[in-house]
Image (cartoon, rainbow, N blue to C red; front, side):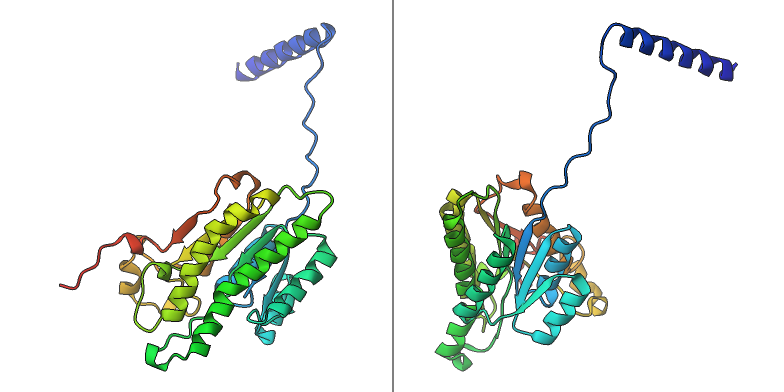
Length: 281
């Protein structure tokens, strides 16, 4: 009985189909496959290790053209081999080196669609042991480099005959922009600057269709994650310490074309720690 029922249903379907076509209605056609979108061109600073390497890998996995710079040649070359991204050895505290790197990418790619300003150093030390030169170096690496890359992108976009209607700047800040430990003056100042610079860039870069957002990671463990203690994880409302991939996924998310309404924001990714009231009892 079941087989007969199926046969009748199929016969009725064929009859309806024939009547439909006879009436002059077009048959349903399969949708043509969409033409492959142009690959996004992504530049990451400080991409050889840690969060930067995870960001490079994530964009490579998302089928983007990816280039990154780092001062560490050995780690940079290894990451390039592992990910397939292009590596440029650059000391970002030297503005000319960073500008030259971007000019090479403009010449090769025609434009840059996404910049992830990830590079950062800590150099934590008691304030009495931190020289003015030490402080200035942290600012140059962590903060000034963000201005340099953003400025270069703005100058290039201004020169284009045909405007690029897509652009993203993502700046890696830190939860230390709003909370601190002793001996972190240079780092805290630089990350506070990154967060503030970001919302200024959101307004300045708008004319070139570029959004600017920052991400503030909390505790992201780059090495020996399996050696963390149980209490390290459980102190987080999310019940675990963060991983570099947590930040990388957020970067890729912000770069989705439909996410252009997220602009000028700082996104905290810390497992909930900055929302946790802590007092010593």
